[in-house]
Length: 317
Ligand SMILES: Nc1nc2c(ncn2[C@@H]2O[C@H](COP(=O)(O)OP(=O)(O)OP(=O)(O)O)[C@@H](O)[C@H]2O)c(=O)[nH]1
Ligand SMILES: [Mg+2]
Image 1 (cartoon, rainbow, N blue to C red):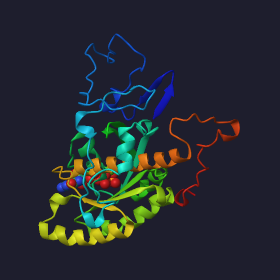
Image 2: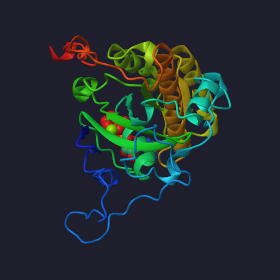
Image 3: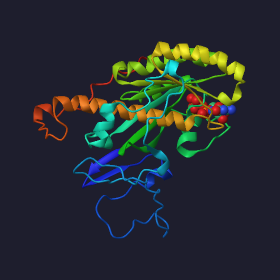
């Protein structure tokens, strides 16, 4: 949740220890904030080597981005046959917009990423491997949804991802699907050792797209538990997965949350491509009105950002 008021932006959720470091006042303060219940100073993550360029006329009110979340070059795709694009570098318009600090509000936005797929395919483990660098071999079903925040710096611009971990169990699907709306990227996970979970990805995609505009989301198809298959089994499965990914126009990845193989590369790619599409959308809007111009919102226009009334999901009726 984000609240704005009195010059303060706060982000929090789920008592996550990485997030409480953000609960700081933006106002200049000579005394370092003290954590509740102890005199120890708050451990703030090490700042990245080059300070991110905050949009002009603004200041950094959040904790510095961790050094290991800095993206200076476009992370490469996993397979060229099923990639959202196979360019080696960021789109030239995006690179120059970042260079010239013309990224508008992108630095303040939080992009929503939803992670869907059959029960027990490894969605929670995938997110936990990246966000907490942990792996739990015991299965604990996600009930409804959960989320993690990750902050990046891409080409010098701060960029935040909200990773929504949804339940795969049928009985929680209805609750989970109410959180699908407003996604900028959809990550559909299947288990590379379970062909049925790959087949079900089409239905997961269809359900997620009911709540989102297909033209405005980017898709990833992720095969999990790569460590459990032999190279021969894996390459057989990969052929099928590539076909499904091409059909969906999704980018394909195969990962292991147990060993960590490809997990960081995958999330960096998600962050980079989501960022790239956000900046391109901002530039497109900016060609109608120059970024930095003042927009006057009259009372007639003040409901511009109100969402349309939600339809009650069929399964809840
Ligand atoms: N060997 C191996 N096991 C994994 C991997 N990822 C997840 N698992 C195991 O698979 C089981 C299910 O993982 P979860 O991440 O909880 O699955 P989920 O998709 O979140 O399940 P729901 O929350 O019910 O939708 C757990 O026992 C994990 O330890 C992996 O990469 N390799
Ligand atoms: Mg889960």
